[in-house]
Length: 69
Image (tube, rainbow, N blue to C red; front, side, top):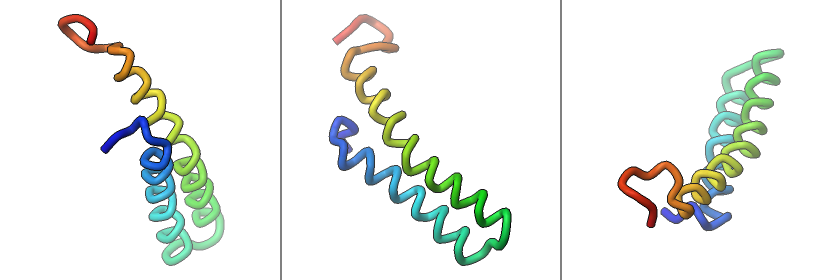
């Protein structure tokens, strides 16, 4: 899995958010449903951004022990 590819990062975020949204729609009601849908949207947007930062820091060699690449 290559986290430098935007489609992979956004696919991971969208799939996680989609699972949360489906559970919210099928099993929750009222305020809990709205809160879960908000978390789903947040997951869809934030996860790819975090994965992008992780991929960039990995490519830079940041956080490695024993030197840089």
